[in-house]
Length: 608
Image (tube, rainbow, N blue to C red):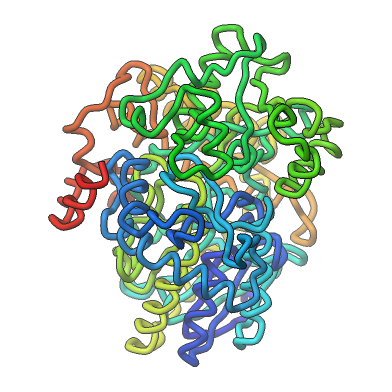
């Protein structure tokens, strides 16, 4: 007989970042029982790495800002393949969510008259990001945790979910194990919310922490949920490139928002070379005007360093490929130059960007108040994810909800900086509310013991030889590393049909190798076993990204096809949907993008 602990809740939340915590708080407010499962320790969620700020049209710095401008910026940044209803809800509800966070104790930077200070960020027309220096995500997690621990939420730390449990197509719980001892756990629930973050660990160079192995995307897919827009993977333009041990660690967009500029090895600001027509009326090629913009001049146009992330990343790649990069295959990000304009520049930089100052000082031996940083693109965020209803956040699988990075729709083809944190608050809250309503209206489903037994057998098979000769056995770390190398090389920033087809073939080979993975030892403290179990998720999301990228034959937002470099409006009118077929094969289909509601279309046209 299989031994496992059983826990029962009305609502189960998987993931304890900003979306998961906000969902759990909202569900608990209805007096229902709520369980919260996190892969790492509470407080170690990747949300803490979101440094720049929370995008919300508070209009504290520029009174011209409102939800309509924010909505239009989000749609334009997403190249109009966004779910317009999600973009509307997000723009309208974000300010109240920020004020709610403030009421719960978040300590934001302040304007001279005491209001929440807001800074400039790429793609946003006005200063919109409420921030706490460059540690906004950390403050957000601290505030949500401090508030959440008083709500009666039960937390299961260092616990990984392996599969979702279903009863006649409805999700009724989850099966997982604790990472310390390897003991199995069953969570019964009337509703389940996935808030598991992104997929960055499918790539070699990433800003994402070790937890980001696409768990939520994969769990939902194997339960029958649709994935959408998986081709849109955001490569943040500025990650550390040197030394090799820190390659990929995020360098916040806040550096550029405070006046940092990008230069090639010749010392030239190369971003002036390529300003898209879509943004030409908002962007200046005049250094003086760009500087005034970063200092809050409401009449100045933004510098090109604050264009959307996809565009900046491609410009950096161009400089590197054409031999104008920095010594370690990056470019230079220079904020030390502001000493020419600001007598108190060194104190200003340390006050506004404390994390960046210490990060480069400790990890690279660089004082950013005196010298330039070396930066390059790093896998950062996935716009695609689980397809959800815009209002309720429920997937097409009854009882299964999703919020945050693992849910698709809001960001379209490219996410604007700062929209991630407000996304977590707005849609985490909605997921918690509607999951609680679903749980109140539905009884507990029946747990299938056969599904638990078969999943446990599958999870434990890695301790056996599987009939493989010792020379055929695969190491989980080697398979994971080879997957990351392949995705970086063939399904990265610049894509072609031949590379993508090679990638799909390589994934089939890697899937076969994953079947031969074995691990020594037992279930206690076994990191190799954890890596072996993660491979299923990594392979699933990697295949979804590659197949969706192959299907979209145009370049739009974060998806750049070198063989189809232009936008195609016919392609833009369709979402790429990935779902599990009856035979277990991954199916890729197209679905028409819903027409934007007429009043919102008018808003977009007026804002243009």
